[in-house]
Length: 380
Ligand SMILES: Cc1ncc(COP(=O)(O)O)c(C=O)c1O
Image 1 (cartoon, rainbow, N blue to C red):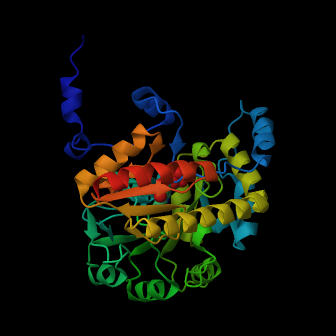
Image 2: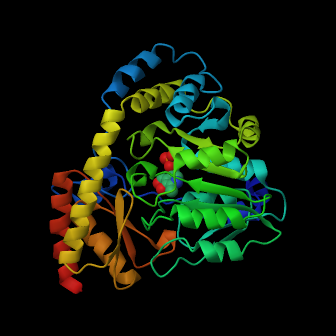
């Protein structure tokens, strides 16, 4: 065997120190390890209602030209999105999932000494992308209600701050910040600070009275009131296309054109672009899935209340329940796995006693509720 020590040791220390993302368990892994009679995969905030049936035809068609490179600007999807969002195409950049766009932000805007400010418990993909670029992340504790503490974040901005990252609704807590909170934050941020609003779950929350208005955000960016704001969106959640890897950013054309320069040229694939265009065109399926998902969530929250299981009210397609401590959260997660219910214990997200559960179709919720009632009662 050849000796590769020199190469390994030359990997920068911050990369060698990384643990890497630990994904939720796959169905195959759970079947192999636990042999449960059935599986409900409720760990990754995917759309349990699937995706629009129109995606199939679009993907078939795109397969016919899969030997060609796709449009580097994802022009078709960009134009469709611009029409859908009522903005200009040059305000949009499309990438392979919003996680890829977070990576893009980290490698486009940062110089030595710059830092990110976010919450102590939010989407781990941000921390990973920042770590890859060796960018320090200042994590501000959540409020007692498990929400982003917008005031504390604004107060902790320093000369080093290049970006403030807010996930709204937040993963894994499901909490959201309101238009008023956002207004205060935007007014307080110096213009050299990029405000990134990650709206991966926007479709589940946008009908709520206080949820920040997309039109208003776009207007502020267009009128250069807050040109330092970028909104991230994804087709992975409500549109049900997690495996296709399509996300996009909305922002000022000058910020967006910087991102086009540093983006991997042919992301997303032509097949993924076609899938996203078909999904976007089928707003009926989107509306159906959002109604179903929100209904499932409120029923599940009533179940939790009835069983005295502490949880944080959610504006997304998942709910975080709170066990006594980390040991209890790990036990509950393990016992649910034994029964074929895959959920996410939240130590990697910074809430060791938390367990995040995606809401699903009726049979999955029945499966979940009976399994959870059994294991919760056994110890609490
Ligand atoms: C807040 C948030 N942002 C981004 C992502 C990543 O989404 P994508 O599949 O588009 O990379 C997730 C996925 O869980 C998320 O929860």
